[in-house]
Image (cartoon, rainbow, N blue to C red):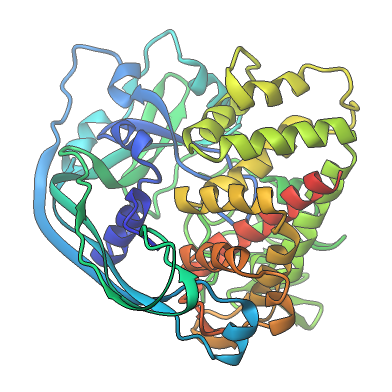
Length: 512
């Protein structure tokens, strides 16, 4: 792991522990997250959250002008410093790792020393924007919202950098057997060595690393901001996530959609209090978790399990087999595409993962259902949507959205590692390894030790093993190359689920 921009953002959120505080995913998007910025979200799965995507509009731009607007104010100034020292094993094969005989290592340090300003608009000031009229000419994203394609939010608090220094150093090492030490010019060497370097790569002043948002609801010609989590307001009829549209848990579990409350699919993935299901109809549990409808007394579910005719079952989003079924369904649909189309999607996705902005731009095109001009690999994929070769019964656009949104759960480092995995054809082995972690631990909200299976590590030699361990570490698992043991962490569940889905879909494409 290194001191990348996305690592800093995620670490800042973890240390501030602010309710509903979210990290900015990439440096290129940081300027778009400012107070009053409008974000959109299109849910595709209950097993991972879709990303907040700026629409490049401010709330103030779509409201009637010449009326009072609240000013953002500095709410707090926060100094943060976090330097990590770790012993890194390098140049080892899987046998040495499993047997614990590795003695090739070096010490690395990385971290940051920053000062943040929290700039936001208090609820008392946001009140003056309630029920303001919209401009007569609506932007396209408002029209799409009215059609129920996604949810809208508005940024109400940002954490801006006022001072920053990012540091990375390789301090000393002990080499046995002629190993290569990454990030140095040592090459093949052995023995003891010492080198102290400090690289400073500051994040520019004014860059937003984290933000908070509130739900934006548009009714007729006015808008409202939901100031509190449990606020209710009539919403437009919308579209269910793909998982609920395409595969209900069972024949009895039909899910109906009702517009009597705001639908927010930011689900607490393992929660002691969750949504309840009565008679196969979803009713409200935690505010915003699911639609509210009238229950029937036939059967029910609340919190830790679902009661169906005297039986207790796991909640849908806490059962690994349902994630597996959902991923399997999408994989089967991808397999129905022609070999040529699958190869084109795979090769161009591999090229796109070098820059997070590329898949984000393609998502924006697909969400707006606009097949306009786009350069590069994203344009090559869009070209396939225009072709007559796609069978009419395959929803190619939604397949692409589902795959891209799974990828966008991963951070920039992981996307780069995934591109390397695609090149080295590691996907199948990595998928089975991720499955072996998720399957036994998926439903547990506490930390549980586990050991990686040696037979799953065996095909991942040398660089492939290093890439795979980094992928898992970036999900939030504490992994060490010379130790197959780790600990399940609830925070790793969503990125691991998205990684499992991404590996499955990409493996299908490479098998074409």
